[in-house]
Length: 149
Image (cartoon, rainbow, N blue to C red; front, side):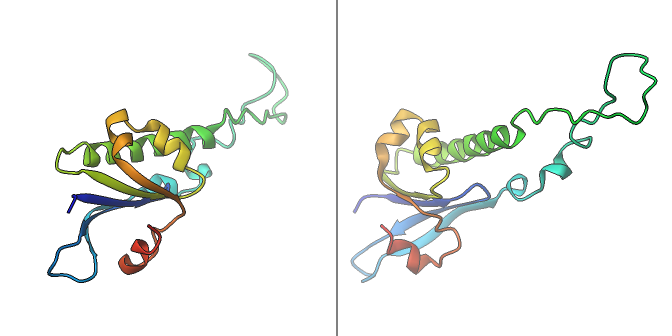
């Protein structure tokens, strides 16, 4: 039987399991290898930036208007944070699947990130992904995860 890694992830949670399917066990079992929760994915943007939407006085230099404030620019902070989180997930997945003992990988990632995640993976890792499921299975029990593959 091939050494199979089953990975379920979304932006905030990552779980990697080893699929154990031997003649002794009639049903396949998942053994948890690694799990982490990314605290950055669950916070509010207001808690992560230092000032309120870049609120600086309008005008330049020595403006005497003290009440007029600028709204600042968003600079796609949420998009950049999302890209960073997907890159971190891809690095974690690369390090696990790159192992020569892992022959194949079954991947389930939330619909919003699965395509970005696969693009960020190394080519030798991408080849080992036998099936990818665009669904968030991170909150399911182990027995229920296998039903989706």
